[in-house]
View 1 (cartoon, helix red, strand yellow):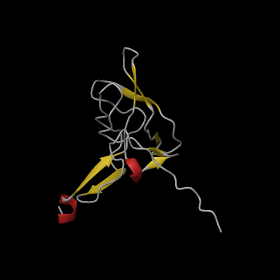
View 2 (tube, one colour):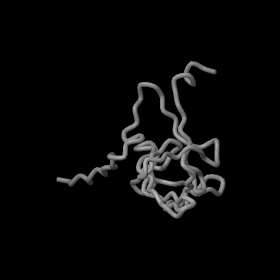
View 3 (cartoon, helix red, strand yellow):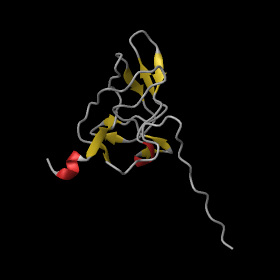
Length: 122
């Protein structure tokens, strides 16, 4: 393992069908983004449980990976019922965080993307 690999962490993207710790699964996604036919989930998408309860994905990749101004969900993303996404159906695609290089909004449910307003020409 290289020194660089020792100083970084990879968080894989969550896709439709992946599981949360308490048995729910991502049942509805609102992106058109796919990896090997699996639609990627993002903040605001739905996790459903066997008893019919639903939860919402609260946080994700922050500014590192977004779809229409919402962060993509990651293994480790938290849900509105206190659960967490714990697995993914793919093992290759995600974001890499290097020590000392923070990503704005990473796993931060309060973070929102702010678009810069176009500058007026004078």
